[in-house]
Length: 315
Image (cartoon, rainbow, N blue to C red; front, side):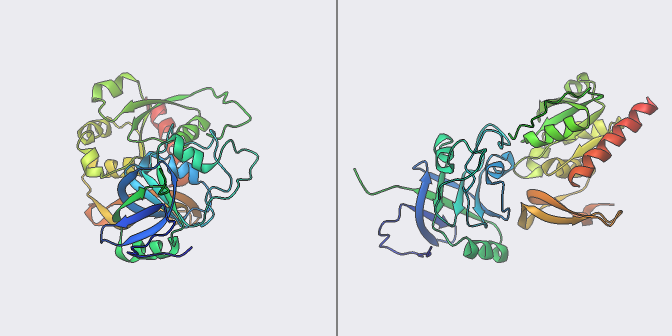
């Protein structure tokens, strides 16, 4: 597909992607006929587009998928990370073809329409990704104006004997996190980010989990950091990922900063410097804890469980 920049004659184009620098990329619309404004980012995953779209961490963001063939396995209820699409829109390279997957229930365009989300395809996503890699994240708008005419469920049910209670502070929690906690026989109670110290303690937590979520950790953390500091003083095991990890850093008097370009994709290698093992991780964040301000994947859940168990034996 060609990319037409600032081309006044759009022919049969039905949508446009407008960057904050005034550059316009013309394409073809999918989903709802509407406009959406958000932070333009890119995701390097080759699979899992439905999980990405329904991840609350993508709130107020427009996802550029670097993999060209998006929509080829359709959509279903089992791959949802939440109840709806949280991304404000997405950018795709190739037009949608017929989906082919035994788990599929519907096509991707129907999924966009159901969630009232605009999308654009026919865009050179390689060009966009290179631009974002060099220049950093940008604000953008998707305008779908149309034609110019009048959760993957296991076969096994969870039969765990829950051993410990974990209180999850919800900044935008994904279903997969709750599934991981269940796998370790942890019984999660989900509270919102405005919960008080007393409300959290009332749940009798053996551990505290700080979830993923969208936005600036400093802005979100201002509502909960003081509460987390009290929980730290109580020596309750605390595990944070993504936004939760950043807010935990703030509670420990570290600082956070916006990254030049975020980490978004399900194929990011991370090396455990203790064991030397490299794992392929799924990441989606545009902020980080500033390492200079200080005076992991599945195994982190295991370490969290061990810490809770160790703490329980002391009591």
